[in-house]
Amino acid sequence: MPGSKLPTVLVDPSVEEAENLVKEAVSRNKTLLVIGRCWVHYLGRAKSKLGPGERILIVKADGSLLVHRSAGYEPVNWMPGGDVVFNVQAKGKILEIRALRQKPVETVMVFFDEIQLVASLALVDSGEFSLYASEEDMQKAILLRPDLLEEGFRPITYEKKVEPGFVDVYGMDKDGKLVVVEIKRKTAGKAAAVQLARYIEAIRTRADRAVRGILAAPSIAKDVQRILTTLDLEFRHVDPRKCAELLSRAETKKLAEFFKET
Amino acid sequence: MPGSKLPTVLVDPSVEEAENLVKEAVSRNKTLLVIGRCWVHYLGRAKSKLGPGERILIVKADGSLLVHRSAGYEPVNWMPGGDVVFNVQAKGKILEIRALRQKPVETVMVFFDEIQLVASLALVDSGEFSLYASEEDMQKAILLRPDLLEEGFRPITYEKKVEPGFVDVYGMDKDGKLVVVEIKRKTAGKAAAVQLARYIEAIRTRADRAVRGILAAPSIAKDVQRILTTLDLEFRHVDPRKCAELLSRAETKKLAEFFKET
DNA sequence: GAGTGGATTTCGCAT
DNA sequence: ATGCGAAGTCCACTC
Figure (cartoon, rainbow over the protein chains, first blue to last red):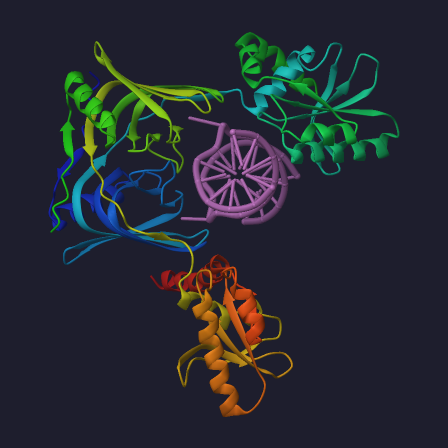
């Protein structure tokens, strides 16, 4: 076993013991875990108060801080990492942990009056994370296999700058008509249709010729079909998962070349 | 001390020991913590792979699952709580924890091959979280930015003693008319309107001049608008959240200065 | 139940 | 540094 260092763990420690380990952890940029009864104040972008209760506090090596309750995906209080400074001190029976960030200026203060567990960790983690089926994957897949969009479609550029922003994909259909493609990785709402319409509008006035607008997404919201019809836009079903599968490594190379050209 | 139950903690457990505690925790809806070397697969709305590394796994009482790395505010893998089903089993030296959600259909699979710590917690947490400003905060905010109440309003005093009690804020409108403001942090009911009316009454008789009464609150109860009209009082929508934001900006400045010193 | 908008959004990538 | 847009966004609210 590549003996990774075991965490230093204190169960039901005294305030002093906890204070020492917490200080050691934050000063050495370890990952810190504190479980116990606490209350929390936040002041910065907003202002909040959290009354006493048992929670999990995590302070990561990069300074990010999380206070998690027993339910809910999101932390009830937090601070993103970066330029965060910590101040830890025991005041009587209470352990105070303060975090201060500079940009933007904000502070989280956690007060523990009962500590069940403190752990100081030196997590070794070089594992790679890869995500498939993002909007970018859909774009790549369409560039690589234009038939996904429609037969005979030929991409010209991607992320093309036009007046309001960037067109996801821009190309020509089998009849030589210009095509603007807006990609959404999940159900496309009204906003997507309107955005596409704006691009079309901008290009039509500039190019002074017919332009087709295609919304490529796994599905569209209920009333959006009506909007599309009104705006003379089209919807094309494209499955992000299928797109991801298409992107094998070999094909990605070809894609790299395509990207280089354009 | 209301002796909250201490967590069950295993440091450097065997796979079997870990398996037992993890199973016990998820089956009894406790909050679970596992720290160790793992890799993670996600399949659902997208698809992701996370290579081996040391992380923190949290499974909460509501089924939400978080995999945290040593840096970053966000979990690298997760599952929101709700209709989540878990499957835990040891396969040889590897502990598998699978979470499956139905809507949408998605699954997270975590594989541990080294376990540093397992903890099963029964977090007791009834503390209230309030992001919104207190009534006092709303008062401060209105004094700081009178425009919140109405354009041209100028506060004169606050917490002014008048016959029945204390007026929250007292000032003048842009036409020089006296204004009495009653602040409520939540939906204002009949009592608030009546209270305001009493202040107005007292001041009118004393000052012998026109006085406007404004009820400042995020909203008013259904029939209160009628009462206000009858009593010739006005309602002004004031968002406690906006007040909190405003105050936090102001108070944050003090914070910034304080930290500049230190 | 679906759609819409906000978030102490966070995060990355562009200019 | 700043700004813009996507996110496995999550979440609360409305229809």
